Every structure is written in C-alpha cells, then in structure tokens.
Image 1 (cartoon, rainbow, N blue to C red):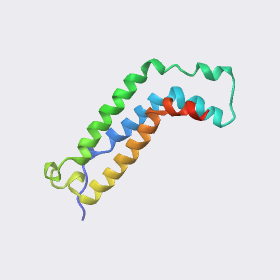
Image 2: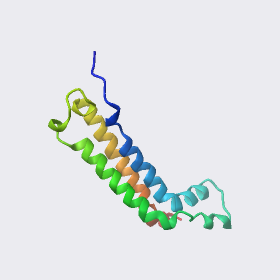
Image 3: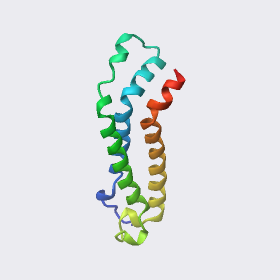
Image 4: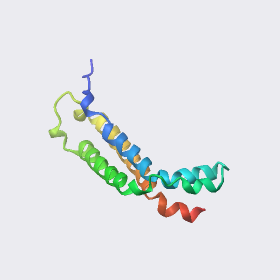
Length: 119
C-alpha cells in the first residue's frame, strides 16, 4: 500500500500565488477580457479599483512563489520519509506544476505592460 501524503505539503503556496497574480492583473486583464468578448462602454475605464493595491499583490506573488519554489526544489534529504516531498514522481509533478503556474503568474503580473500593445 503506498504511503499517505501529508496535507501540510499541499500546493497551497502555488495556488495562492496564482490568485495573487490574478488580483494584481485584474485592473488590466478585466477590461481586456471584456473588450475581447465584445463588451464595451465608458464604464470599463472605471474598473481600476484595485490599481492602488497592485504593488501589494505583486509582492505577495513574489513571496508566495518564492516559498513554493523553495518547497518544491529543496533537497530530497530535507524531506521526512513517507511524505509527498520524498516521492520522486510527486516531486517532479509538483515542479512541473510550479513552473507552469509561475509562468502564468508572470504573464498576469506583467499584463499591464504588454496588453496596451495589443489594443
């Protein structure tokens, strides 16, 4: 019977980082998505409510992804036996998930710089 993995070693840091990246990009991605869907109007310019908090969201993204990166790339010797961290297949899968979500977060966080080029 395979060992049960502890819940403490979950993907919460990665998921939280993506949520923070979405929050950081809402001021730019939200109006862009609405315009892409054909929804327009002067009211779209008022969707910048979260813009003052963008630096906090970006700092949160960096902090959470830094922590998640440390968790998934720490030496296997630092893992307790029987935990998900100690299983090579699980480690590899988590590293792939980490880098995929990190790229998505990077795209979302930098969206305010490249979206205006597309409009």
